Image 1: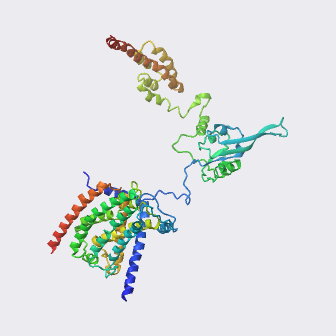
Image 2 (image 1 turned 120 degrees about the vertical axis):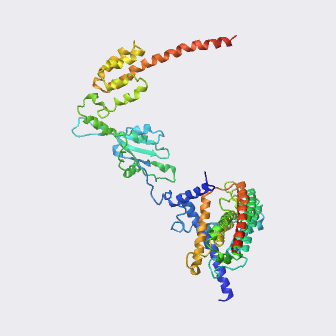
Image 3 (image 1 turned 90 degrees about the vertical axis):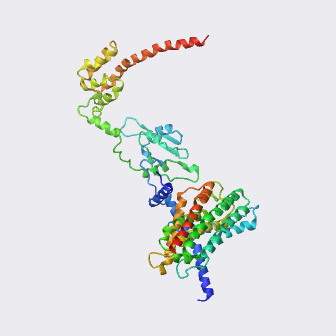
Length: 280
Length: 321
């Protein structure tokens, strides 16, 4: 049931509602835009951090970074021999070529390059878009502090590394994931049942009762499974990381074998007669 | 007051309204349309929210070259914008602003005069279309002629209904006879008059003769500079005239909640601007009608409704008498 003219009235309501809301126009030159964090405006260079490793220039997809340098000998009084040091002569980024991929910033191992949100550096001559190292250095003043981590995001690598180091009784690779350990055995128990329902659940629930875990597969393929299953189920008494990683490798062969047999045997019998009937 | 002074005051008043009201409506259209589309509209001209945008536009139009195409019929081509503009100026002359002869020229056959004069618009459209020697102009002009002739009928029928109810053709007389319950009684006529009026001034959604996406700019394609500005001004004066006519005929003109005698002009202006707002609102909301939909709406909806309203008006009038 629709009233005639209902659509017309709805249209009028939409425009009237829009009129009462704030408009979306950004008055850019008058009002500075509210840029999101990590905006890619221009690349800033912290010259002191640069060791002229050339990684950025090599990784740049556009080849828009030009670096020149020379070596200097630094004689430290008291040292056995003078040391060599790279001195940066030229560091240019051609922003008429740059595609703002940020790879140079990603690869810089010494944190010499940064993103700055400044974007108002248009020029009347394209050649003026080649920013030399002094110009790039000036952008450093506009680099914002790194934004805080997203509260729901993955923890930073540094954080997890620190957690690992601080774990109780940490020794060697055993401490691979103290925080993760509780999660890991649970996941195969829920995900695996679709593929090998018989073997996985008992292993997670009662690691000590190895024989019942190997019995169900024995009904399908008595010859192959028991020797493969028993060494695996012996180990999980400690409920450690290796069990979940190794079990899938032993189970699939048991599941593959019965399925591959029947299709191989049926086609020859069915496809044979038609071929004979057509050829004469 | 000597006669010549009174005449001068009235003429100056009408010309002032003729020049100011369309600018106000045009500026309102800029801003209202922008905000209905989530924009801001003009913000720079004049400093405060672009209030002087239309004045700046006028200055720009004056500076532009006045081009007449070589193939064009020069005299007709140059005369057409004036023919488009003058009828609305004459119509404004007889529309009452308030009681006690607050009107350019009180005329006993005011309604007849207004409808006759507004009907001249079609001549301007045909003149500009034919004289431009441009196929887009010609197509737009033919469409315009078909539309204006078609919508003239419901417009006149709806107006006749009010004239019949009031028992007079004088616009001030109609306002004096108007009573609030006429809003219900004459509602179908009001809708018909308003829609047909929109079509008469070729406003969206009835801008098929202009149809900038198919006909460049219809019959205005070849016009430049001041002559083009005249056409645009005619469009905005047209809004004012249609809004004022709707106000006077159907919304009670100067009759307001209180103080009709000294605040009548204010009620009239408020109503005119409210109706103008609705005209702008319609423009923002609805897409252009196709040519066949346009004619169908006119002949199959508006004309029967207007005729039915005439019967209703006559019946009620007889019942009251």
